[in-house]
Length: 533
Ligand code: FAD
Ligand code: SIN
Image 1: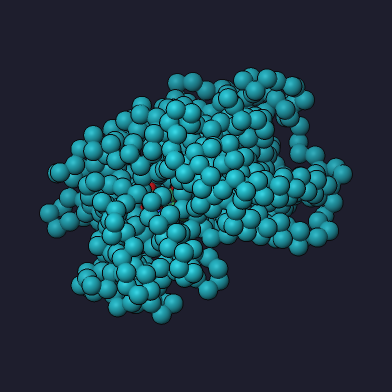
Image 2: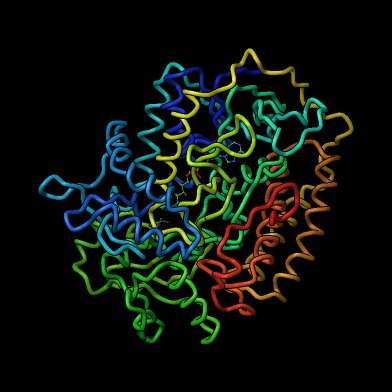
């Protein structure tokens, strides 16, 4: 058993920045399920939104965020995150992030969809790698922080593990069980404060820009422990990803459209010509336009065209995209890039307050796993890295004031694997994983209908039940832990999508094509299997 003041689950921007702040107040253990840098953060391209331009203001950034969020943003959260942005950029620079500068020394500010001004701070098209690398360096040299790679959290420790039945409001978190993949043993990690920083859930969809780690573990663990989760119908599809031969999707940053790139059909017809913001319309609109075009034309891709620009300038601005596409025989300075939409970002998650507190005592959440209220029904591009770092800082300030002491922790029994067997059929795990990803893509994608959602629910309920049974009798493995979490998250997404009988932001249902503020201008909360009224 390991005991620490703070247990951080996840080593992306949210987990690492929280750890660096919390380490001033006590011992920190970070557990992360793969190598330490493997996270969505590491793959972020476009950058971090922050109103620093001469023609920009916090008011403009707030207005753009609210407009994208389509009536569901929490204004106090939007104001706090935008206001605290410049300090966070300074903090990231202090931690060692080198953002691209203009010749006059100021930050180079990119543009992305839904933004009325240039305000995306970036490091070429490899912003995430720069941030992840700098934060990891600081974490590794910090004497109060211990990082454990290849440790996958299984479940949160609560009164449930003591055999005490509590009302949802009275649940507290004492840490987590985690599988150490080197030893194959499940260890107990006790902590005064636990923070979920486990990122997103894009892997429940067949096509996603997200790395393999994005299996919704934090949402599923919090839900099982009795936390309130919400707005899971709002999965953001990025309009432009490049499908690679192995079936994975490589993101083509929205910054490419900010640079001047345009979406065209195979015959060169412009697709976003009729929208007032043209190719820089908000993501939900661009993704739906492409989806509609693909379904009505029978084509399997559209094209993003930057061929009209100076080729050296394009290579300098997007070195990573240029190199990656070239490996697949696309020279972006000469050839339009074939693109399709892919699942990209979960706007919903574990409900938190403005200081990262979940509905479970001593359990915090920050980053993509959390539902803070910033994004509403549709996230504005490049607001997520900003949200993660602001909310991690707020959570760290909160725990400095208020936290459970490790001396007050109860005795939690060790993990008990009696009655479980080594998996008889590995193939079940990969089959079920593929089934979930296919059904979510086919039935719960960019455009939904009651018929499709009903079919999805029938299927996912069956899979969830079967996976649950298999889980209970099988010795734990990385794949099994993820599969169980994916089944729960897919079920939560379908349940939320079925509940919302309107179209708003990222949730579009052909049976209810209009936004209905009178009835539906509120979040969709689920706790203990039920939708909260
Ligand atoms: P992550 O960075 O995903 O980190 C999650 C961590 O949790 C990982 O270390 C993972 O291994 C660990 N983990 C998960 N489950 C467990 C478990 N059970 N046990 C232990 N560890 C676990 N946003 C922007 O604002 N700007 C951008 O330019 C941008 N570009 C993007 C490009 C791509 C390709 C993608 C996929 C996303 C992009 N986003 C962007 C979104 C943004 O990158 C993510 O929302 C953000 O990085 C999430 O940070 P995080 O710390 O919450 O999670
Ligand atoms: C991108 O670079 O297009 C991704 C930005 C984001 O998801 O915020």
